[in-house]
Length: 524
Image (cartoon, rainbow, N blue to C red; front, side, top):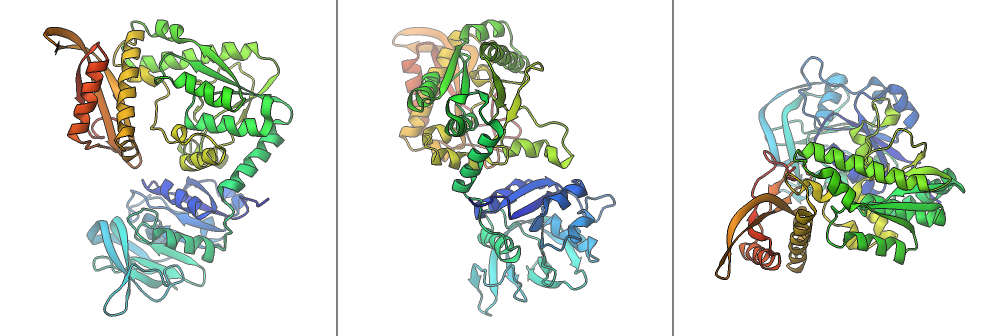
């Protein structure tokens, strides 16, 4: 079996919004990488033993006093280095060059001319101009630029506005690129990163879905042995893939607890039980706790308090079910790599604690379990690829995001069973029609919201005074910003009519056209 961690790239993060994209592109190439803060402990960098290092972009001004710098150890290891945007600028300054405010800032598309046949860009181009020069279509995002090359560095790229858009010390294999190869707008970006990772850093492409699964199954077996494992199964992507991996690795040693809180999507509870308990033979305990959740949420309108109540109720039910089981040694969680990144990575010494990204809303202090977190090195797209390989339904793996508190945060104000039933049906109609009209995969998130207000409507010759449903659909890349989806008017008309005709307690349907910011994607 291939060692998926034998060849690896270290990415030091200076705060760019694109940094996670660098890691994802390296993983897509087939090479393992880790992403850590730029000021990570020097000892960790030495211990990691990377084949190469990438310095990310960032929002700071490199020429300002106190601006972030790459640790000196980076330039002492003797491995190839690639600086991107801010990473290039700090390389220049730290190695004896200079960087200052650009005469003309560049944000968006640019065309660079490659120069001096550098190893990282040689024979990579989008077109050849009339003079025989190679040109690349790239994405720029900078107001600072390198104005003086460090000693022993050569110019390898330029634009009309940026005379030094790339530099290289070929002997040391140090490279700087002012543009962003990690974004899709840079057409040859993946080829450039592949060149750096495989040709320059000499990494083997061992990071494949098949190899990852083999590694994870072996790690689970070695960690768990013949002991029993408990998993909070939500039916979401992460917990579903964890359940499948664990079941394949240890079989009946796994017990899942599925808490049905009454705030799930239509038929979701039955689908979870059918997929795992019936079709896969996984031991799943279904805790039907709908009434408990509704009781605890009664008379509560504050969204933050509702989240806390739902989280604590999950803990209560999960703990009750756990106490009924004997000899449980391990608790499995669906922690994934972005969760670890957000906490700065515990191994680096920068993190305080890893976030509680499990399915039960938080761990009781008196639950004495060891953790099993097989997905903690993986991005969401890698988790989905593993799920597909393990035979999970594509529909389950590629569903739009669903909040942990479920419909509890899509019912504005007080949560009632009646409201949840109305919302569940409205949301189902919306999803059904999005799929029928081939629109589901063209938006990144879509859902219905229950508004606790009544509006006058007319049914036949009678007035009715009933509830309002809001529909929300957005387009986004990173979920940090979002644009409301321009769904066809005829489609919205059809969905609206279905909801009002099929759900007697709804008299009005509205469509949310708010962007993020200033709004959020969810309503609460």
